[in-house]
Length: 275
View: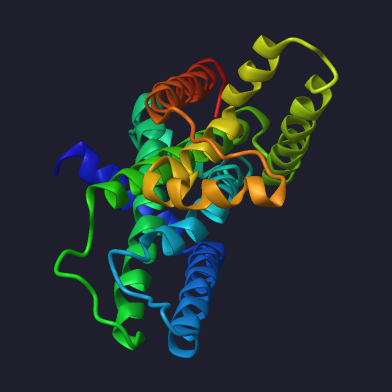
């Protein structure tokens, strides 16, 4: 049997036995369904409002971009960190896996969580249109929708990689979750502090903090310029500054760099420390 297949089977068996895995998937699906139900209700009660695909993918995927990355990090921590205290990590090595293969299994787990969350969102989106009064178009996905999904998936990979590196270094789900939430708070405060500094270069650099990159990758206006053009003419009337959209190409490169660095740090730690 191929080693990747073996690792996939091992990670699936571990995850499937954990109640938190099914609770997290259920909660994620519930939040996505709630967003879809609201859209269907509005389409049924408000004239000129529909809930059909592919037009409503920005709404459905917007919910995923909001809480999907955090779900990925939390679930990654809760599934991986306890393996050190439960000695399942050590047992996998005793049973014949190398540390590199054990790490590869965790990368497979991370990729699997991202694919699973995206699959749940797509399933909810496609299923919800069956209850919508409008008729969907001939194509389920547009190129913009697929790009948006890719951006969200990258965001989940960044959060998940962050959860992986915290689990590897701290080896405690409680400590890892604490540091995760603390970092989220600190990263949110840093840009506010830089507002008092006149350096525009420094403020621009804040756009490339890890979780800010995730936020920008999940900004639907970056993938649907027509919506941006529709919203901006009304903003001056409300004394609001016109909205802009991030350069997704640069953010994709930065996101990939973050993922490689975080995964690399995890692998180095696993190699150096005893399990």
